[in-house]
Amino acid sequence: MSQSQKDQITDIESRYARKRGKLRARIAWADSELADALAEEMSLGPKVETSIEHLKSIVGELQHETVAYVLELRATLTEPQRTIFDERWCRP
Image (cartoon, rainbow, N blue to C red):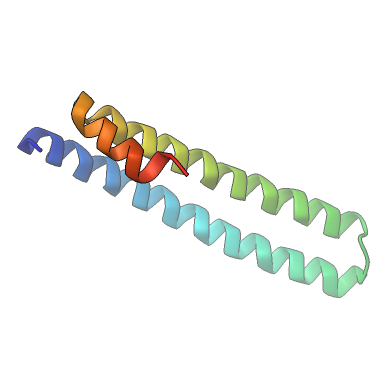
């Protein structure tokens, strides 16, 4: 792996770590919001449903950012490196 690739990957990983950290904090807040709604309604009432949708939205953002991160990492690789990457990380 070239130094340029290492530098690019370090930058990609740093950006992703910041985004992931912010999203995990938002997920924790949304979990708390859901717990409060459940304590208040004790049913699948409107506040609980809204809280669930909010939580799902943030989890979806995290999934989107994770996929974008993997694809951005992959784009820094040469074709032979991509083959190894794909075999290790992208195939079941």
